Length: 605
Image (cartoon, rainbow, N blue to C red; front, top):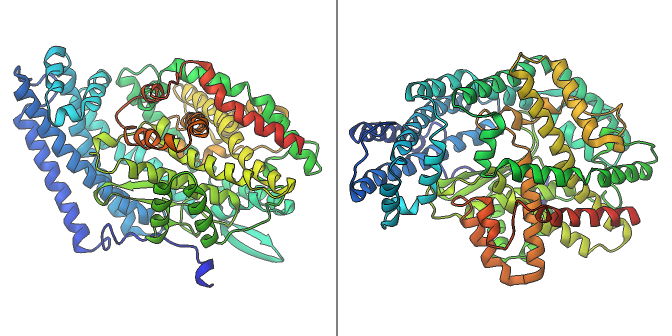
């Protein structure tokens, strides 16, 4: 394979030189020392629920600053270490050393979490003296710089168990919910199945089989569907146990903390309210008939009465073009450069510095993600590149996450905590730029059809499939509160939710009952309902893109400032900077209008 065709693995050497190297071991030792120092500080200052609160604002500001500075330094170190090790775990689940160290770091993370809980409890006590707190936040210094974090901490302090219960919960999670999460990741990353192609049978990782849904050959797509479902059949029982374990733990903890339900915590993490979510979901559901018309038209183009699941991602038009990784890099950098020179330079640097792990291989997890490494102010991107336009778009998406991290350069760890609703904003914005450029430069109707197909596949997943996932998770939580669910139960719920959302757009004989098995989002105990944020991010970014089309280059400073401040404001406050209101249905319909326009254009071709 020549250099142009090589698909890169990421380079982690700028972070540490190895899992058993002196610099990495020294950093782990430093983490332990910082944990000890912070614990001693909390004890000395009596920082705990009901603990001593200095009446003098200057003294109180000093105590807060001591905590904030220690927690920022500790957390940046912890996240860098954890994600560095995850860089090995996620690309090679057979790496036993990495698996062991990752588990050890998670145990240290549990200690950090218990101390953060102590501070949250103490801030609840501080919040009972609002005038003193207000005086602290008016003073120059570290607390004022973290005013948003401190005020949010006061609000969320009401949803805490006792300090002893929170500490126990954090420790038990290591052998409970987090263990179930790790098991799901290991099973999925190591799952392989025999696949016949061109007269040869080969054992392929499940991620490679899933990529075959983008294959131009319909017979290959159908066989991939059959093989994938058979593979999930083999591991469905342990995966059902994993999902029951995670959801059961979440329900127990939420009930003990006084949460209304699992969605309550997700909404608070998203920094939105139920009214905003319901308005968005209602607007999305109104587009389902439009998407069904799109799927019905796609079925006709493929010569079928109804679209089976394996044809959801089928390429149409001149989509047979495949990209080498170098071609993908060049296209992404040049296209994003038409929007922002700063963004283009950043993306070029990410490619040159080998921040991207793109080759699908055995032991590597599926999907794609971006992780930030705060101590070195860098990101790393995982994807499974197959040369398709969809994967080109995926790389651009993840580079949006990395650029979001770049815009927050210089911020402290606690200032960087972006809600999941805004986490998908820059990534989706990048996708929109890429697809808009492709549509503008389409040379003939077939090329335009291919680009529209790529956009509508993604939009339908975010608007329709995301809704099916939201409905699925809602019912799983409701039923898991009463009893464990079998693999059959989970498949039945998933199929019912798909029928409710996809409707007559698909052939209901051929849906995907195992979407619950491989989506890692369902298995994150700290973040339930990681589905609606994708829709939020897409519609938010489409609204911003409309403003960019109106304002041109004048939009760029406000966009970068929005990304920079996204960890220190609510989505509603950030939208208000642009004169937008999230509670008004008009806001959501503006983004959906572009999607409807593209569906109509697709139908007209």
